[in-house]
Image 1 (cartoon, one colour):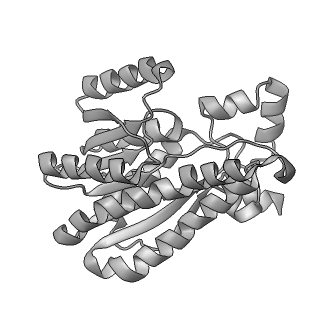
Image 2 (spheres, rainbow, N blue to C red):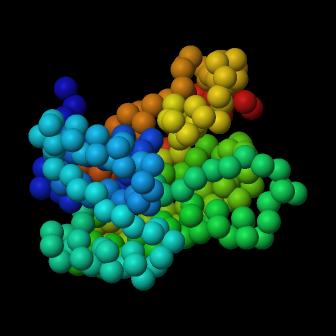
Length: 258
């Protein structure tokens, strides 16, 4: 049986309090890493955050949460330095901060464009820039970027979201070219339809949901655990020879749409 062991590792999940991020946080802790996850500090999410922490600790995991403005480069840098000062390293960085909002091009303002590019792309850059020096010093690191199948099929509901997620691939390729020889592996994971609260809210009737799922050849939507399992695998020693890859997790939907 395949065993993923992240004991002794320190993981940072940017945007790890709900949906895919919460699934990743949970799985990294289950595999043995000490995991810090960030969130926006929205009071509406406090109960979910408290529940996530309680469940992880009940299962024997080590976790902590932190409020962080992912759009603040200086704040991100200071936060990362504080984590490294306390824990001496960050082995695994998962960049999951972001959001989507379906709307046509003509309805997207310049302010909207900048906001979504910053949230879905710049936030990852700020996190990577802050963590890289530590990973280079340790000659080891795993960077996992959460993209979207919109990169492949132009979907996702909005041009700014698709463009930002495509930008993550450019970041990944640069990091692989420059930093793989320094022990840092970077990959992008592109989810498609994942059954999170936000996605279910968007497809808010059973008819709409079933119509969406009917276009997925495996017969179901993905789950946060589907994404989290791949993240944990790539973060572990099993992922030592995997770098520079775009991993599409879509149940065959993108191929079906062709």
